[in-house]
Length: 388
Image 1 (cartoon, helix red, strand yellow):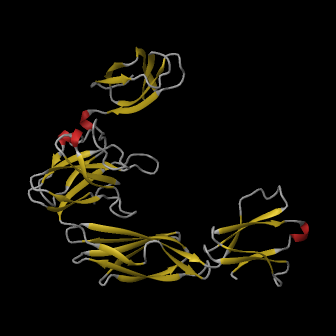
Image 2 (cartoon, one colour):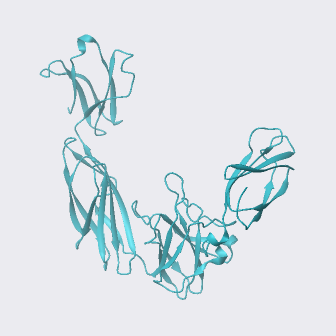
Image 3 (cartoon, one colour):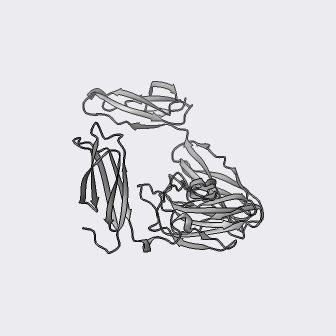
């Protein structure tokens, strides 16, 4: 049985949809893997579960006499003392002024009934702040400095049931930036509500930790990457060839710092600080796919990040064995890969001196698959992919 002194009651509403033909439902309540209660009720009905202590619960319901579960719900009950003081919208913490760092945790925070979604990737561990605009103008809210991957939303309205979304953000414009940042136009005399949540990690686990929220007047620097272009493809002669790539960034002044990161299929990441006129050369890039992130920050700490994706592709074809049952058929499954749209020829040789063409094609699909004869007489053959 659950331990602890403080308990609470929970009302469960039962509807008829999905319960089969039975007018009654069987409800089971588990507490941390142990069956706690099982009861039967008419449908529709409201069932009151009393004296529930803190812990993790699992609630299931199905029509009486039918084995299939119609619905299941998991929920947590936590001691109120563990909840952040600004866990609910009504307890939103006032932001006194610009450039004041508001610090709180969203650990043990909850999502309340009627709460609007902060962002599509939000996990439901929301903490709230409020801010009264004294003047009209551009305002930026940022969670930079938080210890986890945040989401951020700004709302207008007077009740949690009628909040309207003003702006929201998950990543602040780049894959590597786990803080959130929004810029919105404030109206003098209007009260705004700011909700910070944890983003869902790749494994579906909610992120939580220490939140740092700050309001700053103005907007982040204006930033654009002139070169390389987003989606650019750079062609190199072969798979072992490396290339250099010019980097040109346009930034509105004044800025305090401009830097870039390059992540790609090649081992290791590169980080470079850019100085005026914010140009550099990315050197020795092997073939692969890359993400270039450029960030510019101003004197008050507002950051603008931009992602640019580009690729370095070898023109020369490559021959690879494809997936297949090699031992059950007298054939050799080959795939010739290369630059899309280029013309290639697959050639064969018995002695690496004389070569004869097997097939020629324009590489629209990206790879051409060929089943070659695989017999004892042909066991010494060699294959190569060639440009015409």
